[in-house]
Image 1 (cartoon, rainbow, N blue to C red):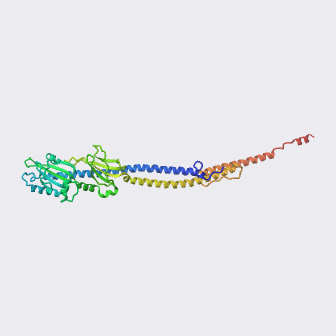
Image 2 (tube, one colour):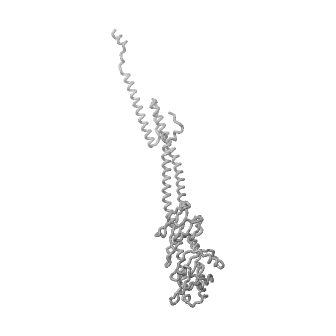
Image 3 (cartoon, rainbow, N blue to C red):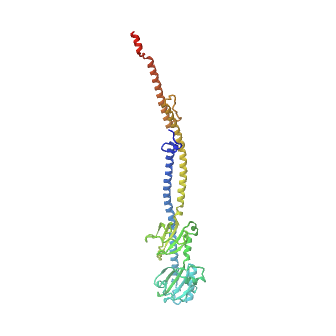
Length: 405
């Protein structure tokens, strides 16, 4: 029965196709499985390493923010504790000179002012708002009793006052205040200060530099209520994602965020815990990068594994096709010789390949079996001929009649 030309590619009847399909399929399956397992393991490793780095950066920034606030409060406390400053008879000009020297030591202070017990500002840096009542301000009311750490507020009036004498253009300030007691222990007033918020940007750049924007690494500071206090914009967003939902007991860690914008981020976070006497505001600092960029090396590795695996599969398919073709040709020659012998061609010799392989052994055994069969057939033929020659002739009817006559 003559087959169609494409039978050689049918693994059901073609040894070549079966070997190629088995070897190629196994190689492809192994490649897919190996690429997947490698990707999973490498992705976990990358997530641990990069996530730990982001967590550390977030903690460092949170810690620096707390330290700067605590340090500025400490400077206010030192100024308020100086003996001349605690004198009730100190002239406003001298008091102003002292607080201006504190401001000169740290440019983080946008404004420092001293309010008497009635809430009247009697001495301020650069005379800004001097003589203004502040008895209703939270920093004054709370600062009469204890150290006060205020939240971040917009103070456009102060920003306008500073515009003529300061290069800072931020309208957001952080309030600090400490109580001032006279040398005899009697309340003398409150020393308050507004900190520039731009120092937080300097802290952010010292921890996560601007070059990180190239890798779309973004830093965001959230208040305890989730308000965005500072954002580097490094991850390419116009508006940063909402603050991650964290357990109150989680002060730092790593998580994957699925944002409403459809982007998944690998995020390291740290919650403010304060420094020394400063107990912190509960701010949350996050360092984010899109997951697709974080795991880009993983995807690249999987692509390389797939490319090399498919190349190897192609080579093995060709090798197995050629090797199986060689075996198939040997088996075909044996089959053809067997068919000729079956059809009565007793002179046909079974092919015997060279070598000690299994095919050569099979062919040799078949050839020996056929030779033995041929010899036995020849011996049987000779024996039949000999028997025919020695057997007496069988009398016929005519010869019998002739013998009776």
